[in-house]
Image 1 (cartoon, rainbow, N blue to C red):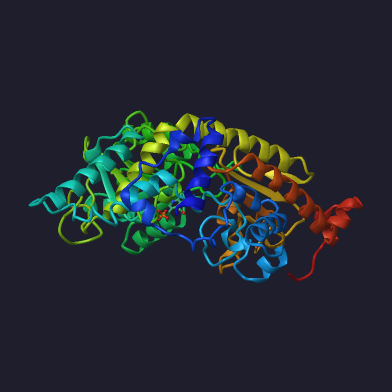
Image 2 (cartoon, helix red, strand yellow):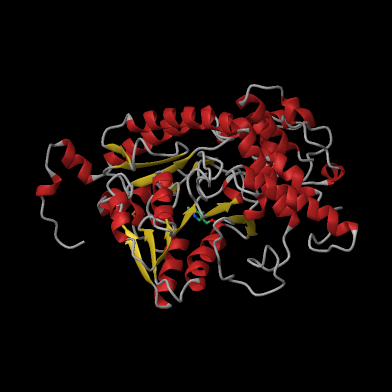
Length: 501
Ligand SMILES: Cc1ncc(COP(=O)(O)O)c(C=O)c1O
Ligand code: FES
């Protein structure tokens, strides 16, 4: 009954990596056959496994085709199938979520779809393997503990860490808070200063601001127009009382990769702890905590096709980094993170990490190929620019500005594609992106930016569809825009004095 979720993804995996689907046969936990994610089709109606692959590029045609297939199987008319409410559409895309058929998913920086192999690993921890991994007096505890330690080893291996240096948390937000608050609090007698950047994720920025309220001083480094920090500026910011430098590895809005190895070397030379938020980097670009002199590194499972609500922090043991824990309690996770671990999530995260390592080369090649295609397609329209460094970037995160188009209107016009605006316009704040501002983009350009995310399960058909859809709708929206009309007439918009706003 995992049919649509699992079979579809497996079909895709086998197509992507050009291997027989059998390679991806689930290990077949006994529980799998009992799991139902959607109501089964009426007797005698056979759903085509691959069908949903087509539905999200041409929803209506797909719905009609599916309705007519079902109609002939059940001896009614396609219209009757559609009218019955049990239509095609409710089964068309993965599990029945109650939201009908959903758009193409291109918001991989927000989160990634769960890999079916991860799901297969997780399920048995919700059924048979329910022991508390911290119980050490019986086999229920031991068996779960073995799985937890196995997962820890997989998480560590991806970044060349020792499993003992991995502490499980609820996600990268918690990991970042643990570091930004826990390190300065521990060393507060002698150290009063932190360094980070203007383009960090909100959770780092807000945690740093919270420390300012506790009396610490924070330097927020600028970035250049490509989104990169200046190592000289970093060096100049270092003080004798600096305890921590926190610079993210891959930016979540623009995909820019900071010079992590160089920053690590500089911090080591000055005996300052170096933390990197690797929520968007772990498993996606090569990261080695020893080679890069990283002392602390944040990881999020749901960005690597694993479950949500779990992540980790890597904490170096030699030289040892001390942290004041955020939570008081039973002292689990080397005393740094009290609370009973969630074995289903830990095991799923471990499997996701194992797969990131195992499939690193495949994923890289696949994502790079689709990314190049998407970037070339999107940039072929005039007045369209790629934000962030073209050379130091993770190809799966593409942020493009479409001048003379309001990002919000474009997102509305692209409702068949799940995307996020570079600006915060989908959130309540309606402020343009602080990251694009930090790169020196003006409000107008920051407002017309959209982020496209490509992942392991993205397909070429999806990219083709998106390129065409964006081109058509940008053209359409520009034709409605008085600014665009002026640009076409050769009027220099900068020469105009606007009144009011
Ligand atoms: C760079 C970065 N840091 C931190 C986070 C927060 O991660 P989590 O959802 O695991 O708390 C995210 C996810 O949005 C992110 O992209
Ligand atoms: S693009 Fe949404 S507020 Fe400007």
